[in-house]
Length: 254
Ligand code: PGA
Image (cartoon, rainbow, N blue to C red; front, side, top):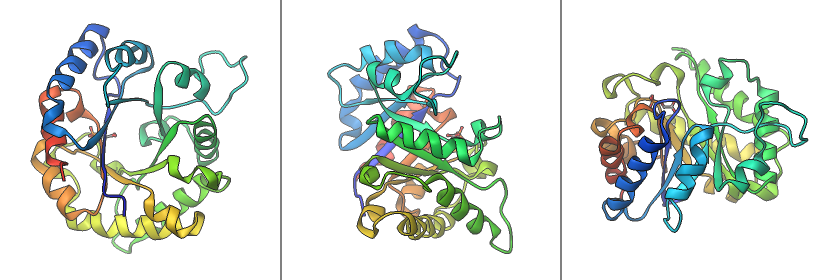
């Protein structure tokens, strides 16, 4: 299993102004010794990518995008291609976040975005997650089908550029008390790894980092990482304040 820890700040629309983004990055860089060894990605909204990338120049911290277009041809008003993101310094792209799926992104579009992202040289963070738990275990079948459809045409040569973020929708945007427990997470993490071996070569599948997202906060980060058998986190609301984000990063040190 991939032992390196990876934590992604999904800022959503929490950080609004370039000056706030720059202040956050300056402060994160100043504290980087506190989380040495942890791979960190900050995913701001599109207009903040350039200032964040500039502030992160010559730092180990990477820039991510919260989504990416499924298209690469220019006449697509309002879309942002993987090539543009890459040219602006982005190396990671979140794909298929549940908030985007709720706005209409279907499995087919998610698969197309995933393919575009990795073909352009980005690392794609595929988000999967059930809306609710099913006492009969239907959530496992649901996750398996989300992964299978997203990876249907996935170029296997790019397996190294794949990350899977398991984000149960029912746990997003709440608090640590409502998040998943480490032991429940472990079961799902093992299941996801097994499911990945159906789509990728076994060795490649075992190397895909599995992240957890959904109300990760300083209070639960340590137990989730210790018990959950995940490589790290995709953090939403708690990533918008540098203090809480750094606490989560500290919890992820090996
Ligand atoms: P949350 O969001 O940490 O605010 O629950 C996580 C996510 O949606 O990626």
